[in-house]
Length: 490
Image 1 (cartoon, rainbow, N blue to C red):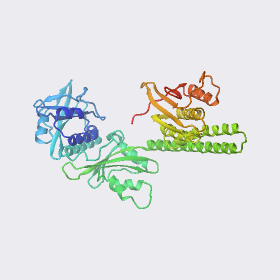
Image 2: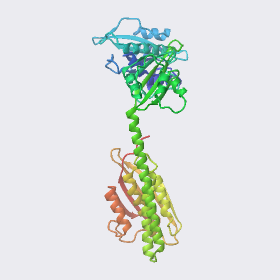
Image 3: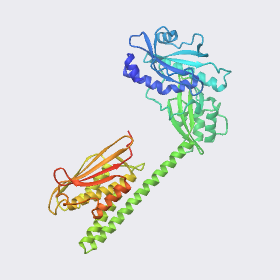
Image 4: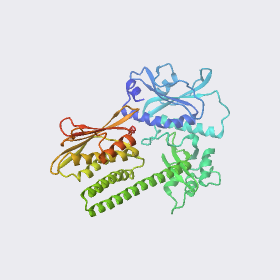
């Protein structure tokens, strides 16, 4: 719609925003009217109309099999559009049109904003299945007529009340029509079922909806006056009411077709099962986070015990082996700590990499600087845990073997997301400017425990490749190529 309006019309950005607000609401008008809606806007030169949006009803057959968006119609070909635009009134005159042997009643509703008519809604009703309307259908049609008059007067949609059509109740979910005092004139079968789920034993018709709703809500001190007013339909609001056996979502729409409040529409949906599942998921997420938190605590306890044991050892080699184990356990604990703060089993690995760098740098014998470039991004837990251990081993190996006791230097970790959309990959490099690899060194056969752990995790757990080679200028470069899952776009 943005492209069509900006290409063909003279409407301002604020006018376009109003049309977006209207389109976010007009599924309701379409369903209540049992009719297709097409929004026509006059072109910049005023000689044609361009259709910028279309909506089909969920409550009846469509009048348009084809997509009408983008069609251009010369002014004069559809006189009802001209009359609605020029006179600013709803136009219903004329005989039904015949489209592919289907009679269609056409009406035109001007779209007004701040006293100006921006365009016209063509309401097209398929008359092929017309029959004697029921009380439900009569209520729908009367409500649609009231909304159409509000659109023509510029009082609907409500500014600042853009609706999520997927999340809000629809007419078919349940509809209640109130008079000006908030008393129920009509309640659809679905609406009655939802209120019976809340605990209502009687019929709703003739009762004040706000008071009846407040009585069904659990007693928590004085009657909630705000709830009474909301359920009476005095303001355009969405809210939920929870009873002993159910939860219903309500949306109130005040009706002021001629500027005077004549009543309200209340759309409602039984969301009991939806809320129950959400609570189960919240409980499950909380349990998973608590498990990760406890695993992290247990790993930190293990690390503390190993550290305590290392202090009591006389053997320098044994003490160093225990300290290496402490760092390995610590790298896993960092991942679980991060997972304990998330709602899913994915983590932002850049923070983990920085913490691993800081942890390993603490044991550096000389003045070695560590830094990270690039982004690891968001990784699954099953990738993050082994990758943190791999990173710990590689960094520890670099600090131990690249520099002497008093030597300084730099260790840099780089990360680049690459590959294709279907097969994304993560390329990790760890490079130092130390003394380099010994002559004849083969990283695929070296017996060092740390390198054995790296090979096993990279090739077995992560399904990637690992290589160790001389850096371009000086030192050593380790390269990891790992398949990963694509990051979600935000």
